[in-house]
Amino acid sequence: MPQRPVDDIALLVARTMSLDADHVATLDLPSEPAAVAGARRFASDTLTAWGLDELSFTTELIVSELVTNAIRYGKSPIRLRMILQSTLTCEVFDANSTAPHLRRARTYDEGGRGLLLVAQFAKRWGTRHGREGKVIWAEQALLVGDL
Image 1 (cartoon, one colour):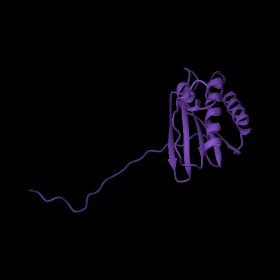
Image 2: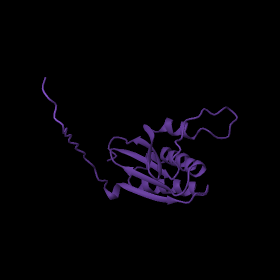
Image 3: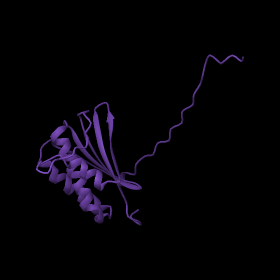
Image 4: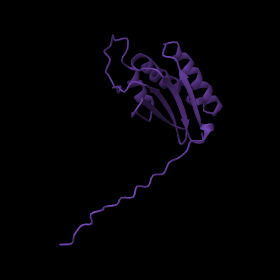
């Protein structure tokens, strides 16, 4: 039986992509409910600059829900980042590591539908955890010819 080498070597190759600065927009937000309107306005203005006005309604809704959750359940700092690549990604960072979860709101509940709406309007969504908190992201498909 052949002897296995004592020193196993593994080669890991990673390819990173840098984001084009013209395709990333970031906004730091105060942890107060009034910041949600500013986040929606920022999203709308960013989409206009990128020539994606047709995504305004869904993007503003997604941003509104993600920022509201970060303000309500997260911790400062809170940051919105929009990334335009082959899709449109909206990310909201907050310093709390607790992961959100989908809830099924009852008919008369005033809240509890935010992530359900995000899941309905986004192509994909999820959570990324880091040392300093988490990012909740939602990805939307671009219409043909947007890029």
